[in-house]
Image 1 (tube, rainbow, N blue to C red):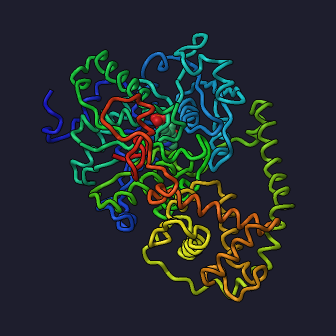
Image 2: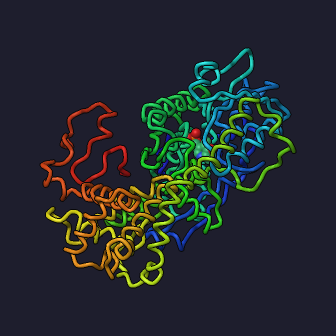
Image 3: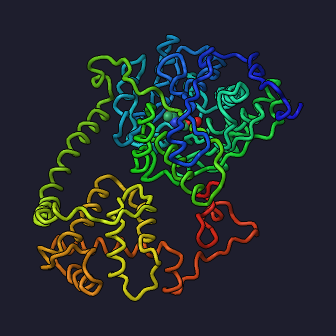
Length: 556
Ligand SMILES: *Cc1c(COP(=O)(O)O)cnc(C)c1O
C-alpha cells in the first residue's frame, strides 16, 4: 500500500464495507483545555470526548460493540453471555446494547470494592434484560466458569469476552484512530505527540495504535494500566495486536494488516492499590477534569489522567518539548441512567448479602477508629490547636514548591524536622528536596492515611508548646532545641510519641529516596547497571540507571 504518511485525506472509508451497527457514527468532539495546558506547560492539550459517543450513554465500549454485535455469532443470537466486575462499564454497555437490540444478557459478576459509580452501574445492569450470576471473586469465577473468560460459546450461547475485546471489536478502535486522523486533517486539533488512554483488556490501546498508523499520525499511545501488571503485559498486547492484524488478513484487507502500528507505551505507575480501587492521585485527576466540565471516574480514566499530569511534570522538569497531548476519555457520561425501582431485589442473594455487609461494616469500622485512635489524636490536636490557631501563619512561601499533597508550610516543617532528625548525615542544600519524593508517595496512599499524616505533621509542629514547654513551634526552634524536642517526643509512649515516630519514619523515607543519601549507607545505586545485554523482559522492567525510573515506569 502507499505509505500512510503520504495520504492527503485519512481514509476513514476503508472500513466502510464491513458490517457494523452504525453506532458511534459521528466523530466525538475534541475539547481543547487551554488553561490546563498553560498550567502544565503543554503547548496544546485536549480531550477526546468519547463519553459522548451515540447512541445511549456513551463510552469507548460502544465503539467495540458497534462492530462486534454486527458479526456472527453475536449478530444472530437471542442471548449473550458476558462478564465483568459488579460496577463494570463493559456490562453497562452490553446491557444497553441488549435493551436496544431486544436480546438477553447473562451477566457474570465478580466483586470489586465500592467507589464512585459502582452502584450506579450495577443498578443499570440489574435493571436491564439481564440474568445476574454472582461469583465472590475473579478467581472463583475462573475456577467455576472458565468458559466465561476463555470460550467463545457456552452451551451454544455466544460469549462476549472480558472488556469486549476481540479482533472484530478492535475494528471499532481502528476506526476511532482514523476518525482522529480526520479531525487532525480538518484542523480540529494539532497532531498529538501523545495520547493518554486507560488500559484494561488492551483492546482500546491496540486498536488505536493500528488506526492512528493507518491515518498517518505518528502519535504514541500511552496506555495507563488500570489492572495489575500480570493482567496488562506487553506479551498480552502483542498477542492482541497479532490477532487484530491476522483478522484483517482473514477478512480480505491484507493491505491494512501490513501497516506498522504506532508505538504503545505501557505505564504501570498509576495502578495504585489495585484494580477497582481508587488512588489519591486518581481522585485528584478526576477533580482536575471536573473543573473542565468533564466527568471521569477513579478506576480507569482518573488513573489515565493522573499519569498525564505526572508525565507533564516530569517532561517540564527535564525541559522536553510538549507540543500537543491528547487525553482520550473512555468512560460513559456521568449522568444517572434509567433504573427500575427495587433493582436490588433482582440481585443474586449472595451479592445482596455482600453489599449489606460492606455497607454495614464500613460504618462500624469508622466508629471503632473514632473510638480510640481518633479520640486520642483528637484530644492532642485540641490541646495543640489552642496555640495552633495563632501560629498557623507566617511560614515561608517557598515559590519553587510544586507539591500535590503537601502545602509549602508542610514542606517547610518536613525540612525543619529533617535537619534535626538526620543531623550528621549529608543533607541536600535545599532541605525541601526531602519532601518531594514524600509528596509523591503520600499522594498515592488511601485518603484516611493521608489525613492522619497531615495531622501528625501539624501535631508534632504545634505540640512544642504544650508538651515541650517552648514558646515557638517546632520549625522555629533553634536547631539544638529542635533536636532535643524531637528526640524527647520520639521517646514518648503516647499518641504524641506515635506521631513523632511517624514523622521520623517519613523523613527517613524521603531522605533515602534521594540518590545523594545512598553513599552514606554504602549503597551504590541499583545493583544492575543499565547495559544493552539482553535480559528477561520482566526483569528489565525493574532495572534503571541511578536516578532514573525503571523501564516499567518510564514514559519514553
Ligand atoms: C473498559 C474500559 C477501559 C479499558 O479498555 P480496554 O480496551 O479494556 O483496555 C478504559 N476505560 C473505561 C472507562 C472502560 O470501561
